[in-house]
Amino acid sequence: MLRELVEILACTVCHEPLTLAVSREAGVEVETGTLTCTACGEVYPITEGIPNLLPPDLRRAIEAESSGAAR
Ligand SMILES: [Zn+2]
Image (cartoon, rainbow, N blue to C red):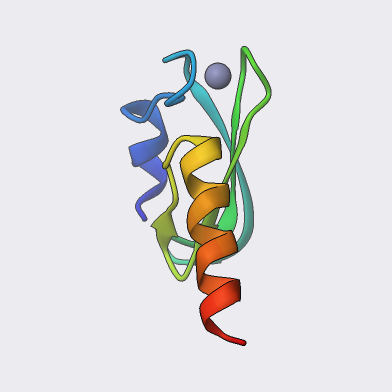
């Protein structure tokens, strides 16, 4: 995702702004990192350039399902 995107993204829980922490970047593109909510502290992962902004309960449900399918 582009760095500037953090300015238009908001927490899906409380709709407050997010803080970007970059682990790996390529030019203006953030490849890996996290978006942290400034209000509730919820952490959204960025993997392969894609921010995962699903609400935390839905994200955990999907993760549980995909790890179950891998068995
Ligand atoms: Zn929040």
